[in-house]
Length: 285
Ligand SMILES: Nc1ncnc2c1ncn2[C@@H]1O[C@H](COP(=O)(O)OP(=O)(O)OP(=O)(O)O)[C@@H](O)[C@H]1O
Ligand SMILES: O=P(O)(O)OC[C@H]1O[C@H](OP(=O)(O)OP(=O)(O)O)[C@H](O)[C@@H]1O
Ligand SMILES: [Mg+2]
Image (cartoon, rainbow, N blue to C red; front, side):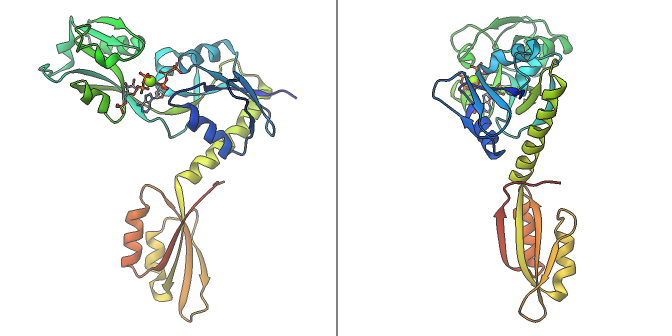
């Protein structure tokens, strides 16, 4: 039977969460240490452990059918590669930064300046769109050190918490793009493997929906139920069950993780009691 080939970062920021996602999708991987390739024992999947920076080329060449990759790298060197899902981890941005002492007002201040970066295409395109001409210095790591050692006047690199910029006395002045881990697909994927990919995507979406949601159970007097239902958005409509206690009901619903603390406050004010909040493993529509 044909297998879908997926690239996962060998080591680095994306590795652990990529494998955790596959595991949550119920895909078991026969994983010997230091292997470059592994197979799933219960899903038609071959896993290739590759450098994040090399994955766009492997996708273009059709060596792998799909990949979990940082979206920013597709902007850098992923022309023709489709993104079919955003995975919600490794969130960061690609930004321009300058020394704290640089009197930066607009991007025009970078005209004629030296910019160090590991992402030359992204930087070049952004400068071009803004009519700025600057000299690029391509370096592969520790980009933030460049202004301090006199190699550059500015940098273009990944920022997440901002602590690397802070430690190097730099300030973020332009956000070029926001990025997260994505599921990317080779332009040459076969029809058969596309069908396997659809199955994988279905599982991933169910897992991500579950991660984003919480199952809420609560008790309330019947005369408060209408007001409480208005607060709870629910999947379709909340489940309502009578309690053994006369005049009381139990209400079950699903609430988005990002808003659930606010919703809980409102529920309490509306008369809800004994509120339970549970994680959801998978959510299928
Ligand atoms: N500090 C960060 N916070 C959140 N996400 C990040 C951070 N740094 C990088 N990322 C994201 O994770 C991806 C992988 O970053 P990582 O530094 O592990 O690999 P890399 O330098 O691109 O390379 P390679 O696997 O080619 O050695 C990046 O493309 C980016 O999308
Ligand atoms: O805003 P922060 O939270 O400080 O994160 C940003 C830093 O994280 C990344 O480096 P990484 O740790 O991946 O090291 P690397 O340069 O070896 O890839 C990136 O290149 C920045 O240096
Ligand atoms: Mg890095």
